[in-house]
Image (tube, rainbow, N blue to C red; front, side, top):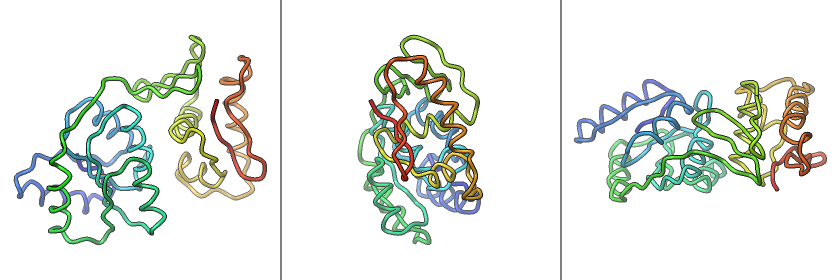
Length: 219
């Protein structure tokens, strides 16, 4: 499965792999790739970092959260920090753009030797909070919680990064796919709405403010 937002890059990779004898599915949307990756059987995933709806790092975290050990090769732009983040998220290898197709093919061949393993459910858990990434549903302590689309994306991203401190700027970039005015209160507003639904009706707080830094979700 090739997941690249850039159509030219996706076609280049897909055509080259098909000429080398591989069967290739190509997608451009991170959320579609998560659904497709957890409902189909693949030997390898080639993923970009910058994707609509769900970025590549979050996509890989989602695949790992689903219990998939399928090899993942990042083919993306990036500095050392980006490469480290991709590998720590569950990537097996990272090839920086621009790249030689012969090198890509060599890495695909090496990673493709690993047999895939998979499970059926894609449900994130923190304490008694559950989020189903396929159905886009949330519940806590057996109580269904209705979330608006942006609240859903915010909670999903936070749960995929459980225990990690997430700065406002990172949440704006990953959840809103844009660089907002630094003075905007959109993050605070949505965090407040999430707390009203996910935390306040229950005895134990899961969403935490890290003073002068950002937010985190943990038990």
